[in-house]
Amino acid sequence: MGFSSQAGQVILRTQAVQGVYQADTGTAGVGIRLRGGSLGPNRDLMIPDPEIGGGRDVTDANLGTSSWSGDYEFYARVDSFLTLAYAALGLKASPPAVGGVTTHTITPSDAAQLPFLSIEERIAANFETYQYTDAVVNTLHLEAEANGYLMGTAGLIAAKQIAGATSTPDPGWDTTPMFVGTNIMVTYNSVSLPAKSFSLDINNNFEDDDFRLGSFFIGDLTPKRREITAGFTIRESSSALWRQAVYGSPSATQVGGVTSKAPLVITMSTYDDIPDSEPPTKYTLELTIPNFSLNPYALSVSGDDILDSDIEGQAMRPDPGEDIITLTAQTGLAQIA
Image 1 (cartoon, rainbow, N blue to C red):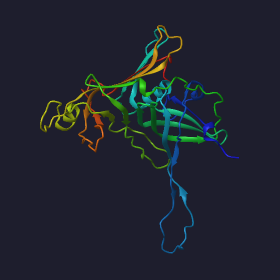
Image 2: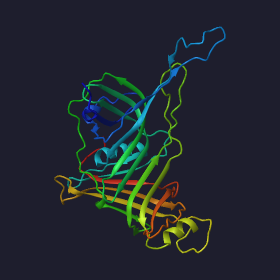
Image 3: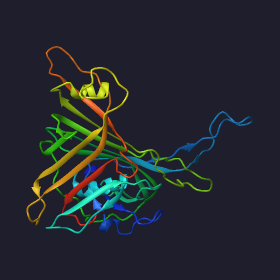
Image 4: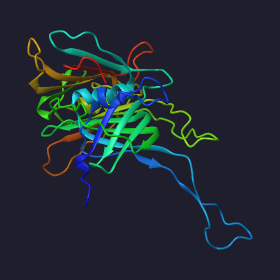
């Protein structure tokens, strides 16, 4: 008898105390439907070097330090995505609902530690159930094409795992509607772009090798420099973006050294309304980068092809008192799991 991956489940829950698995993960966490992925071990079989006086064969080995990491791939539904985004950025605000709608705001934290997650992960139906403690979101990726769904990938690192846990029989699945490309808009410098696709990446660059004597486990998971990048494919309609990316200004006619920065805003909404919202309100997700600088790029010219360009860029911190990125979402969920 084989095991079908589709019978598995993953539940995410923000952890209150470092080092302590969140006891209500199964009941208060959010079940995230995955396209694929799981956390796997980072552990080596330690084989000693050859010794003078020993034989030619390996006679023994031991297991070394351990951590777990992997990618979860998913269609981005707003309620479960908010838990991952909060873990990736670090600050949240969820004021009381108005008309059945809660507007959540997530912004980056400059603290030395980002929120931990407790995760319940069941592989197949009865193969194995794991509990992960002190899991962090190292990378978070979003992408969408015009004729497709909003999809995400979260790269996680967990400090501890136990096997043989009892899986939650009926997790609180996130069944909010999916976002589609026809309801996604990209604007740059307040101008709507003829974008065919977009992508966004947040990388926390966690240091994941802080192993210490006397323990199998990572002593600490500390985020290092945060990198936020985005990209989009457009049908070129003028040379303004190319000039800005290569020359530094959309009006320049030769190279300069100063980069132009402008707001990049990506807005998404669903076809469906939030149940019982008054007035009827769509689920929404908005990503705002106040200072976004374009990378220089080459024009792709070939035969009778129409000019399309893949453009990428870097988010810049506007000011020490401002946020490099702000995520705003409207949903019926009162609090982020």
